[in-house]
Amino acid sequence: MENTPETTAVDGGLPRRTVLAGAAWTIPVIAAATITPTASASGTLQLAFDKTTYNGTACSTITGAYVTATTNGVATTGASITVSLSNGYTFSGGATSATGLSGTDGRYVVPDINVPVAGGTSTVTAGSGSQTASSSIKGAPAATAVFTHWSPDTGQSGYINMTTNGVPANATPVGFDTWLTPGGDLYRSATKIATNVTAAVAQFVNNGSGAVGVKTSYQTSTAVFTHWSPDTGQSGYINMTTNGVPANATPVGFDTWLTPDRDLQ
Image 1 (tube, helix red, strand yellow):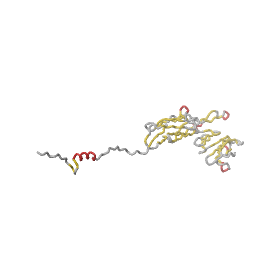
Image 2: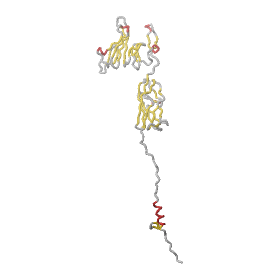
Image 3: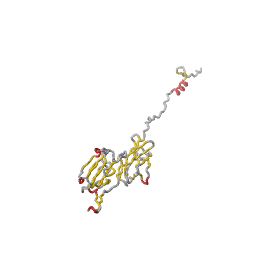
Image 4: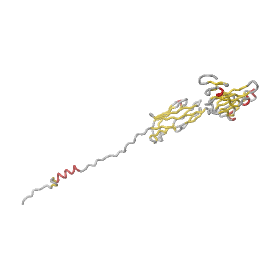
């Protein structure tokens, strides 16, 4: 019996084993890829105080102030923030600066701020890296009352509490029974005689004929004035500007004025 030679099946003229072997290399390879979101532009840290102005009173403390750090509107945790004071305002221990980290809400609570004896205004500044923010502080002078004291020979010896008579407690005496408030209100006793006053001097007057009273010289942003109390016979206001005294002159005594050019009127 004749042996029939074994033949290798071919596909398109190629042996099957060759075709199968080649198939392993021709299967498409799908590469795995990790999709990464496009990174957003990095935001800039922003600082802001909780108030544009903090108000206090001399020799007291301002509490609860804070600075908020945000990035793209989101609270920033762990930002190092330094807060600095000026014009006599200090933190406890006398330091003029304090540093701390913002919390999870983005806030750095500023230590208590001591208002100096003289009060006054100050700028408080916060900084973190190149970013800054600022606010202002206003401290009113410490005052509980204003008084007038009469010597015994007037028949009105002792003290008169002008606060109870209507003179504001933070008013400053500028002459005989005359007071000027930080807001520019000028009082003669308990009567307001002018507003928007920047400087004033008052003096007791005796005209030699038995008429007595008080003459007050004062300055506003636009003019200088003299005010006579009614019992002098020269009641009312006299606009000294129209009489030749420059509007920028400052009263320095009884109807006497000093200009910025050092001219004495």
